[in-house]
Image (cartoon, rainbow, N blue to C red):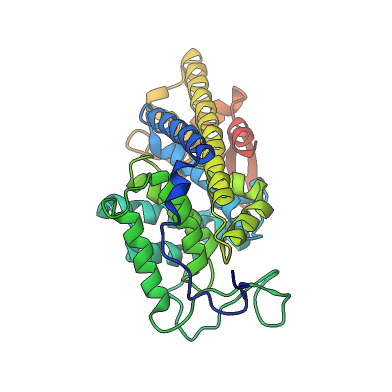
Length: 369
C-alpha cells in the first residue's frame, strides 16, 4: 500500500460502508449486541419518567461539559452551574458560554430530527452554527484547513491530517455520507454500526473550519434518535471519550490511510455500552432523589403539587423566579417555599450578586460523580 501523506488533502477518502466482512466479525457482533441491549434498556427507562425534559437538561449539560473538555474547554461544575443560573441575564462568559452553546445545539438538532425524520445537511449546519455561534457554513474550498498535533496554523507543530479540499469536494462527500445514513434500502446495515462508521467519516471530511468534534458528537446522539434507538438526547457519550481521549484520536487516525476499522468500531461500541449504563445510573439516582424529596415534603406537609418538584431538579442552582408558574405567581411565595426546603436540610442558600439563590447539593453530587 502506498504511504499515506498527511500533508496532502485526503480527497481519496473512500465512501461508506467499509468492507462487509466487518459485520460478521464475532467480536464486533458481540459488542454490538451488548450496546444495543443497553440502549434499549435506557430507552425503556426514559419512557417511564414523569418529566423527561428535566433529565434531558441535566444529562445534556453533563454531555456538553464533557464534549467541550475534549476540545480543552474547561470549567468547574460550580462555575458552570452558577453561570447557568444567570443565563437569562447575559451573565455567561468564557467556558460556561461554550458549554451552553453545545446544549442549545443539541436541542436545535433534536427539534430538526423530530421534524424531518432524517439527517439533512441543513440540520448538520444548524448544529454547527449553534455550537460556534456563527453564520458560517461548509468551509470554502479555498480554505487551507489542516489539523495539527497542537492547535492550528502553519507554525504550530506537525500536521496530523489534511481533510478533503477542492471545489465541490466537501459537499459531494457530505451528500454521500447523508445518503449512507438515511438510505437503509441501499445500505442495510445496523443503525448503531452506521452511527459509529459515520462519526469517523464526518470527522475525516471535516466540513467546517472549526467545531467539527463537538458537532460530530452531537450528530451521533441525533442519529440514534432518528433511528428510534433513543427517544431523547440523553446519551452521555462524551464522558467515555474524554476518559479515553488519546485512544479516541489514535483509533480515528488508524482508519485514515490504513482503513483499520475494527479497533475503531470496538472502541465506539464500548463507548456506547458504558455511557448508556452510566446514563441509566444517573437517571435512576436523580429519579430516586426526586421521590425522596417528594416524600419529605409530604411528611412535612409542604404543598407538593403547588411547588412542582421537578423544577427543583432542572439545575443545581435555583432562583426563586425559576419556580414561578400558574400555581406560584409571586417571587415572595417562591422564596417562602425555598426557605422551607432549606430548613429541612434539602437546599442550601447563598448570596450571589444582589440576590439569594438556593443550591440542590445532592443533585450536584450526582451530576459531578
